[in-house]
Structures are given as C-alpha cells and as structure tokens.
Length: 288
Picture 1: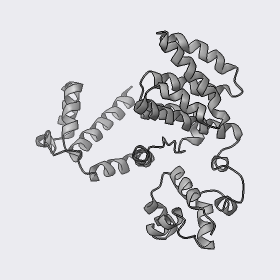
Picture 2 (picture 1 turned 90 degrees about the vertical axis):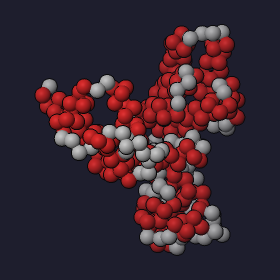
Picture 3 (picture 1 turned 60 degrees about the vertical axis):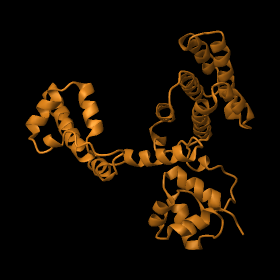
C-alpha cells in the first residue's frame, strides 16, 4: 500500500491545524485523518484531490511521485527554501541550548547532512571559542557580520548570526521565532516554524491561530478560556462602573500595580479594561 501518512501530517502541521480541524474542512471524521496519517488507510480519489487543493500542491506530490521537498511546494525559489530550512535548524538550536547547553549546538549542526548547516556550525564554533575567551557578544558580532557578507546568501547568513547571538545571550523561543519570521519576510509569516518538541509546537500552533483572529474574535476566545488559576474576584467590584471611571483608574494607577491586579482578575473583567484601554489609545492617537 502507498504510504502518504507522513506527507499529510507534515502539510497539516505547516497549516497549523489539528486533525479535528482538517477533518472539519474536508467533511470527514477526525478518526479518518488519524488513519491516513498512521498509514492505516488511504483517502479516496476525491479526497486526494481535495487534500491537494487545500494544501496547494498536486496529487503527485501527496503520493510521493515527485522528488520535490515539502518546502519546494511553498517557496518561491531555492533560496527561500534554504532560508526556511536554516530557520528551523536555528529554532531547534534554541530548544537544544535550553535543554542541553550551548556546547551541544555545534555538534548538532555538524551532524546534519545538509549544506544549510555549514555556516551556522561555523558561527556556533566561533561564538563558543569567543565565549571561552570571555569575549562579549557585541565584540564578536562585527567579525561574524563580515563573514556573513561573504556568504552566497547574505540575508540568511545575517539571520544565522543574529539568532545565534540571541541564543548565546539566553533569549527564549518566542523571541527567536519572531526574529526568524522577520528575516523570512511577510509572504512566509504564516509558515509554521517548529522546534521538534511536540508540546511546545502544539502550544505555538494554538498561538498562531489566535494571531490571525480579529480583535473581537480574540476577546471572545480569551473570555471562553478556562482560567489558569482560581478566581480571585479582584477588581470585580469595579466591573459595572462607567467607562469614565475605568479611564480614571487607568490614568491614576501605577503600571506595576495594575498589571498585578489584571493578572489576578477574571478574564471577563480583564477584557473590559483592555477594551477601555484600547479606546483610550484610539482617542489619544486621534487627538495627537
């Protein structure tokens, strides 16, 4: 039997969808999608065409009859494909640094049988040597930037330098991922950059879907979420006060104190204050 489970799984992850969400878009059950991805069943010909259209690829690509890589179906050219692959290697480096330390990065990059990893591996070794000599990141960056200028794709090389310096500086995955997206460009903003950690990637997929919502959809989403902890009912006494009083509270309350109060209050109350704060900003902008 032809096996296309891994291909469907990869395309679904690139779209940032769960099995249930993909099933809903195709009009099938979630168990059917699960069987496809585990290679326990194949979609019929009509569903294969629907899958190909939805994933913006061809049936031949789904069936593995073309030798194109997954990213070649999404990328404008080979340079963009290499840049996205490099970005995913760098994001995994960020995860690896947090779990196993900075010494693991060069070894990991050297183990990859991919030309995209050659310059990142060199940079990781250069930074580690510099850190062992107690050099500061700002002292090392000019040298790496000049190395980057000599690379075939200077933008990808600069992305590598910037992100590795962030990793060595202890920056976390969310900031590193956003930096990578800024180098990939607006046309690839919705591309899913995965770390390889199942839980972290699932949380990221959920956040990505929220990013694409309208403001009202986001407020509804957060209002319907279960609270992270027990309700404290702080600020509830003010939930029915006028917008004018909320505006006065926002003006007079210390930022740190307001943050603590908002973190502890119920989501519905928090949304009321966020709405009013947004309105204040709009009024301020119009006045300015």
